[in-house]
Length: 131
Image (cartoon, rainbow, N blue to C red; front, side, top):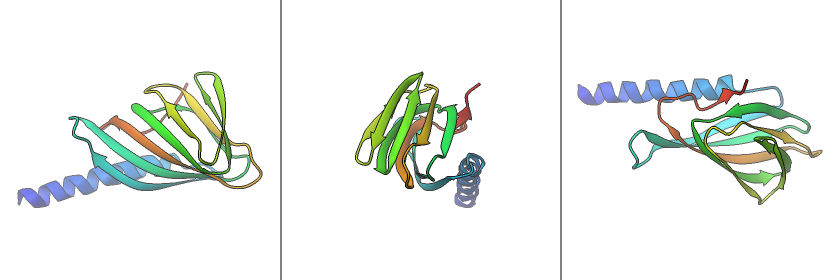
């Protein structure tokens, strides 16, 4: 019976993450969850998401409850982290410190995509829009 309870809890928590990701969808942006795994550090997990941006689309200032590591799969992005602008192209990587307000925008003329890897606190919203 305990196993069934754990499965139900896992499905509920996985569903909660999926809801956060779905709620974070915006016009011109598609987020595809790839994996969510507990880390060996208590209370921490890794979440990976493929994020695709149509030309000209962007995501406004937001924060995460941990670090984000970005790998640009295709296209050209402009990231602004705590006011500092970085332009990135396919093959580039970027580190976003925990709690840093940042935004992302596809500044190219074709679709752009990134692999976002989050190392975050479990149980907290994956994404919070900055004020």
